[in-house]
Image 1 (cartoon, one colour):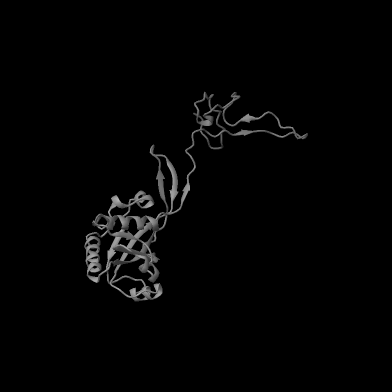
Image 2: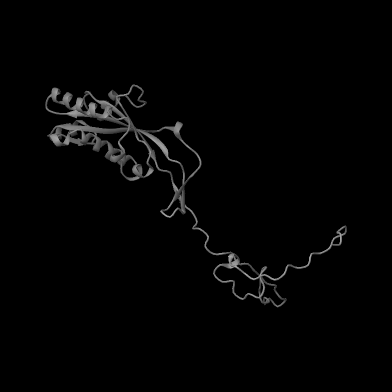
Length: 235
């Protein structure tokens, strides 16, 4: 799921016209060494925090059907995770960086969710909304200054972007539908250990129950006489 969120976010930033104008969109960690090797205007979306949203954890199991409407699997409910990105712009001048960052901000704040057309893999199959929160005040994640200190770089302007995405639950294949009837035979075992010829339960004079087993249509004889009990009245 994580790589699918990466791809959706990269596609969304690409639609803002960054790549068309020669700006690279990358997911690298903006370390000091990385910044020194950079040679073109770049927008970097660095994923630095992943946490589960336990308040959205569900229970039970969903059912998965094939094209013919047959049950083929049961799937546990998805679990939701918050992925937090540090988005920065890199250019030769601060003015150019701020212009790129403004272009990114304009693109991201226009969407509360990642558009469905940009989702791939399991995110597209689940058909659930993938939330997008840009520069929100309630981001429960490490502060940007702490991230920069861990990366060994210098603090610069950045956007905090949080994506709420579902992780598909585990699936267990369901047994195929029953297409043949149940066949039951009973046999008595003699003293010498050799079984007597088996007899078919309920149906008589049928050597082979056939493909349909008990579900097949059979000719039945008259019902056995009902045993009289004390108190029964004569007709």
